[in-house]
Length: 156
Image 1 (tube, helix red, strand yellow):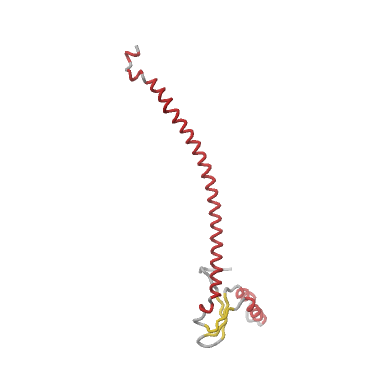
Image 2: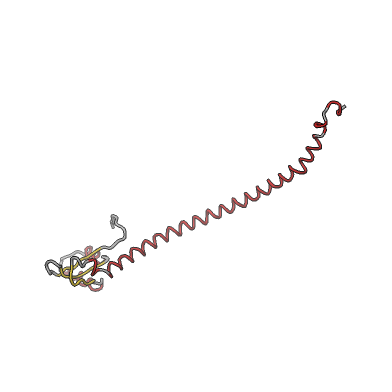
Protein backbone atom coordinates (compact mmCIF):
# COMPACT_ATOMS: atom_id res chain seq x y z
CA UNK A 1 0.00 0.00 0.00
CA UNK A 2 2.88 2.38 0.82
CA UNK A 3 4.44 1.71 -2.53
CA UNK A 4 1.21 2.70 -4.25
CA UNK A 5 0.67 5.90 -2.29
CA UNK A 6 4.26 7.11 -1.94
CA UNK A 7 6.58 7.87 -4.77
CA UNK A 8 9.93 6.14 -5.12
CA UNK A 9 11.61 9.33 -3.98
CA UNK A 10 9.61 9.46 -0.73
CA UNK A 11 10.17 5.77 -0.11
CA UNK A 12 13.94 6.21 -0.39
CA UNK A 13 13.98 9.11 2.07
CA UNK A 14 14.66 6.99 5.22
CA UNK A 15 17.64 5.30 3.56
CA UNK A 16 18.93 8.58 2.21
CA UNK A 17 18.51 10.17 5.65
CA UNK A 18 20.47 7.31 7.30
CA UNK A 19 23.19 7.70 4.68
CA UNK A 20 23.25 11.46 5.40
CA UNK A 21 23.65 10.80 9.15
CA UNK A 22 26.48 8.30 8.54
CA UNK A 23 28.42 10.09 5.85
CA UNK A 24 27.81 13.79 6.44
CA UNK A 25 26.19 14.66 9.78
CA UNK A 26 28.39 12.57 12.14
CA UNK A 27 31.67 13.76 10.56
CA UNK A 28 30.32 17.33 10.66
CA UNK A 29 29.42 16.89 14.32
CA UNK A 30 32.91 15.53 15.04
CA UNK A 31 34.48 18.47 13.20
CA UNK A 32 32.29 20.88 15.17
CA UNK A 33 33.34 19.29 18.46
CA UNK A 34 37.01 19.56 17.43
CA UNK A 35 36.51 23.22 16.46
CA UNK A 36 34.87 23.92 19.83
CA UNK A 37 37.89 22.36 21.60
CA UNK A 38 40.23 24.43 19.43
CA UNK A 39 38.28 27.57 20.33
CA UNK A 40 38.71 26.83 24.03
CA UNK A 41 42.46 26.41 23.51
CA UNK A 42 42.55 29.69 21.57
CA UNK A 43 40.63 31.47 24.33
CA UNK A 44 43.18 30.26 26.88
CA UNK A 45 46.04 31.37 24.59
CA UNK A 46 44.47 34.81 24.12
CA UNK A 47 44.12 35.18 27.89
CA UNK A 48 47.83 34.40 28.33
CA UNK A 49 48.73 36.77 25.50
CA UNK A 50 46.70 39.57 27.08
CA UNK A 51 48.58 39.08 30.33
CA UNK A 52 51.90 39.07 28.46
CA UNK A 53 50.95 42.26 26.61
CA UNK A 54 50.04 43.94 29.89
CA UNK A 55 53.49 43.03 31.27
CA UNK A 56 55.14 44.29 28.07
CA UNK A 57 53.23 47.57 28.25
CA UNK A 58 54.44 48.09 31.79
CA UNK A 59 58.01 47.25 30.75
CA UNK A 60 57.84 49.68 27.82
CA UNK A 61 56.44 52.39 30.10
CA UNK A 62 59.45 51.90 32.40
CA UNK A 63 61.85 51.88 29.46
CA UNK A 64 60.40 55.15 28.18
CA UNK A 65 61.07 56.76 31.55
CA UNK A 66 64.60 55.34 31.63
CA UNK A 67 65.37 56.46 28.07
CA UNK A 68 63.96 59.91 28.81
CA UNK A 69 66.18 60.17 31.85
CA UNK A 70 69.21 59.03 29.86
CA UNK A 71 68.43 61.54 27.11
CA UNK A 72 68.29 64.31 29.69
CA UNK A 73 71.57 63.28 31.30
CA UNK A 74 73.29 62.94 27.92
CA UNK A 75 72.06 66.39 26.93
CA UNK A 76 73.36 67.87 30.17
CA UNK A 77 76.76 66.27 29.56
CA UNK A 78 76.78 67.60 26.01
CA UNK A 79 76.04 71.11 27.27
CA UNK A 80 78.86 70.86 29.81
CA UNK A 81 81.30 69.47 27.22
CA UNK A 82 80.38 72.15 24.69
CA UNK A 83 80.00 75.07 27.11
CA UNK A 84 82.85 76.96 25.43
CA UNK A 85 80.93 76.87 22.14
CA UNK A 86 77.45 77.43 23.60
CA UNK A 87 78.45 80.38 25.78
CA UNK A 88 81.20 81.59 23.45
CA UNK A 89 78.99 84.26 21.91
CA UNK A 90 78.80 85.99 25.29
CA UNK A 91 82.00 85.01 27.06
CA UNK A 92 85.73 84.77 26.48
CA UNK A 93 87.91 82.33 28.41
CA UNK A 94 84.86 80.21 29.21
CA UNK A 95 85.48 77.60 31.88
CA UNK A 96 83.04 75.08 33.35
CA UNK A 97 82.98 75.15 37.14
CA UNK A 98 82.27 71.79 38.77
CA UNK A 99 79.93 71.64 41.79
CA UNK A 100 82.76 70.87 44.21
CA UNK A 101 84.42 74.16 43.23
CA UNK A 102 81.38 76.42 43.58
CA UNK A 103 79.83 74.85 46.68
CA UNK A 104 82.34 76.61 48.95
CA UNK A 105 81.65 79.89 47.14
CA UNK A 106 77.90 79.42 47.78
CA UNK A 107 78.51 78.58 51.44
CA UNK A 108 80.54 81.80 51.79
CA UNK A 109 77.64 83.73 50.20
CA UNK A 110 75.26 82.28 52.82
CA UNK A 111 77.66 83.28 55.61
CA UNK A 112 77.82 86.81 54.17
CA UNK A 113 74.00 87.00 54.04
CA UNK A 114 73.99 87.37 50.24
CA UNK A 115 71.83 84.28 49.54
CA UNK A 116 69.52 81.99 51.47
CA UNK A 117 69.99 78.27 52.06
CA UNK A 118 67.16 77.60 49.58
CA UNK A 119 68.94 79.68 46.94
CA UNK A 120 72.14 77.73 47.59
CA UNK A 121 70.24 74.44 47.17
CA UNK A 122 68.81 75.65 43.86
CA UNK A 123 72.24 76.72 42.64
CA UNK A 124 73.84 73.39 43.60
CA UNK A 125 71.24 71.61 41.46
CA UNK A 126 72.11 73.65 38.37
CA UNK A 127 73.09 71.63 35.32
CA UNK A 128 76.00 73.81 34.23
CA UNK A 129 77.93 76.68 35.78
CA UNK A 130 80.46 78.54 33.65
CA UNK A 131 82.87 81.33 34.40
CA UNK A 132 84.26 83.74 31.87
CA UNK A 133 84.71 87.34 30.83
CA UNK A 134 81.94 89.20 29.04
CA UNK A 135 83.02 89.92 25.47
CA UNK A 136 81.63 93.44 25.46
CA UNK A 137 82.84 94.65 28.88
CA UNK A 138 85.58 92.26 29.97
CA UNK A 139 83.80 91.88 33.32
CA UNK A 140 84.25 88.46 34.92
CA UNK A 141 80.88 86.68 35.38
CA UNK A 142 79.48 83.35 36.40
CA UNK A 143 76.53 81.99 34.41
CA UNK A 144 74.23 79.31 35.77
CA UNK A 145 72.17 77.32 33.27
CA UNK A 146 69.57 74.61 33.24
CA UNK A 147 69.88 72.11 30.37
CA UNK A 148 66.80 70.12 29.40
CA UNK A 149 65.55 68.15 26.41
CA UNK A 150 62.00 69.16 27.34
CA UNK A 151 60.60 72.47 28.41
CA UNK A 152 57.78 72.40 30.93
CA UNK A 153 56.67 73.97 34.15
CA UNK A 154 58.56 72.43 37.06
CA UNK A 155 57.31 73.26 40.50
CA UNK A 156 58.84 71.79 43.63
